[in-house]
Picture: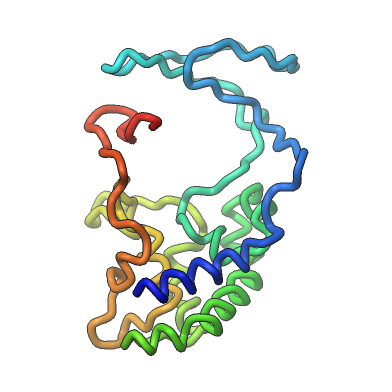
Length: 216
């Protein structure tokens, strides 16, 4: 499994080369100050209304109320690993709207990168006793879960990948199982690749907002 982990990391790194933000590129996103410090940027915004909340640790959180048109999307966090592993033009994808996912604007890149991962990893998966899926089958099986690339929650269904997710859930390993493994093969399921990545955080989550561990 360690050998597969290294190969997978190498494959994802190769797909990601040259796809990051260009040096000096301005995302156009107004800064958000979570410590309550004043915004010193000279901009044209006239909306200074903010909502402030204080948690039990005494930290003050400031929520800007600017209209959505003031912002530019710079990242998508609906389904982690989709942009990393399946998209070549990461900047374009992150700025795009999920409506274009449904219109299959990114289908070509997704299919090509799923195929590239299989070419790089199928032999190693089989050497570990795992059965890879055919690229077409994997794409068809994964599409309902990753297109559109949003975080979905159905309160009538059990919570967890792919119906929402918990902070400590190994969602990346689950998505990799979707796009790499034949889940109809005996003994293989969405948890088969859990352990490719760390299975625990180095700091505990909390029971109060914002729930994630404090910066460390």
